[in-house]
Length: 209
Image 1 (cartoon, rainbow, N blue to C red):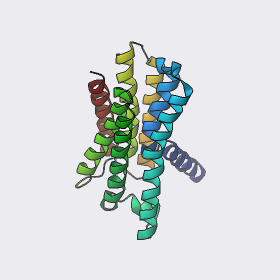
Image 2 (cartoon, rainbow, N blue to C red):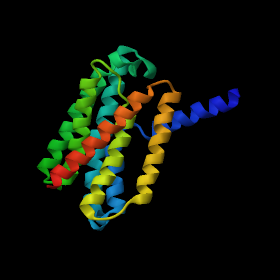
Image 3 (cartoon, rainbow, N blue to C red):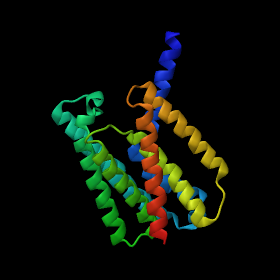
Image 4 (cartoon, one colour):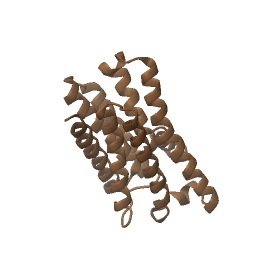
């Protein structure tokens, strides 16, 4: 019985690492470049966009958050406490805003900027909610992936039924993982997913319009 519990916990940790919230914008762009008509774009341009997204939405926030954690001498578990999450949110918020500025400067497509804007607004909502309640940012990221897929299916007129089912299945696994690891309640998981989904749908479609 204990071995099964250990396997569940290990699996939950692996899923939580693979689908860290900071990776969500990069996953969206990778999916867009591989599975939509955007795959015809020049590789040089796609690589430029992916490098910008990686640098500002993963490398800079993770570096800043880890430095802050080391300065405070906090463990990863202590950093996940609601009262300690303000600074990581602020670092991420500033980095996402910088990504949006850079994309505007290079005149990237409007719905590219919509993806980053959705992630930025999601972070702002999380910061606001975090003042009194702990929402699952992992599920915000996963909700953002599902919302982005739904938005692009509307924009590009295709039916992504199997990818959609796959992402919903992964969402369920990730949400269960966060509960197994005792990081969030069911309500925090569900609210996080709704925030990410709503922001992606709203801002990607609005940017296109």
